[in-house]
Length: 555
Image (cartoon, rainbow, N blue to C red; front, side, top):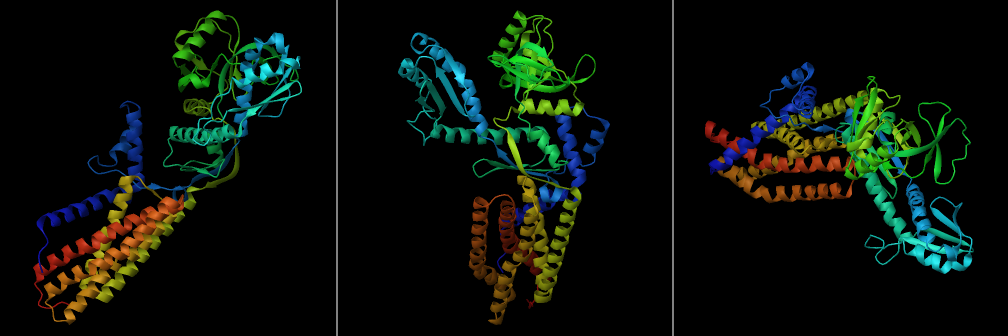
């Protein structure tokens, strides 16, 4: 039997050692997870650590790897939501924002069109009434001049606005091409903002995926309940700073043109009439952090970008003594009186907040406002007890499967079956090590993939051992029989595992969610199984042959 090259032996031993060491943290999951959380928290605090964080950090040696497999929703427990994005809200907002532009564009044509007013119309449609219909052609041309080209490959050459006339009215709405482009942008923006909000909250490995044309699937392991997740992502968090016209207790008060009537969040029965156009909006925020006001009550401090800071500073300088409404999602959360010029673009939002409220509001403001409201069609909370039951069941399945395979191999191939079992154990360590290295999320289907790999892992050994038996029947020496067994079984091993790897690849790219988890573990298991069967068992057999120097072998 020709000995394996020295560099191959060294490489195999290094890979085996790495696999065992890298998989080790998963055997102490809770301790290592606390260690990792403490390290992250200390780094975020600039190196400052509490005694509890120092204890958690010291609980796991720094010289050992600390990468863990992330546990999926079905193993850790958490919240599951299926949300529908109300994309039509964006159409309405676009029309509301377009009205001042149309009014200004028609102002220069007043001699031809007469007076201009906005008429009632369904959401997403802007209807403008002219008192002089003779100026309609000029008015249509002016309004169409506000349109632009649709910014998509499929909408090239098409206008963003559909402008028509009905009697004395100009009817404006988004074109079909622009609606499709707007829907796509709205969904992409919603996905990104949800992802940022969930990441800001410090959750692990969330699943945030688009489903169909207007739905989003959100699965967040480790969060307490679906209600908690809804509070985090369900609020649009549209923040504006508006000039206050008046304060009233009449819920039916007339706001007047270009004004809106909004309720106060903290003052029951009190309403504010504010100007519809904001002085500054939350889009110009660059930072928001939970803090405390001068009375020690929870609040949110904020900071604008350069443009927002200039607008905020100019307004406060010119309106000292006037109230200034801070509006969040169509509620006035506070309306402080401007005491002095506020330069620098920073300030503080006060209200009847708890610490949790101020923290959540800061997260929402940092992540940005959702472009449209969401309706939750499905919600589930998976408790950690159920997740632990799944982990225990998966662990039992893996252990039972491994024991059954080990007994079969020893009964069928004796000492060579023991060698295959050693390689199988190393194979399991390598799978866990690779999953930890790439930060993969382990789910119940993923455990199924690992259990399946246990059964498949010894297939290559069976092929090799049966081939060795055939060579021994032809009176080959033990060393030569082993060498030929590995050489002649190699093509069958590669063929069988290559087809499985192709299947796993197709499942990964065509599947979603749990199917991807199964595909990842199956694909990694195929690669590590081939490596352990061809190289590790051969190295073990070679070392055994050199040590025992048997005249005959029984396989």
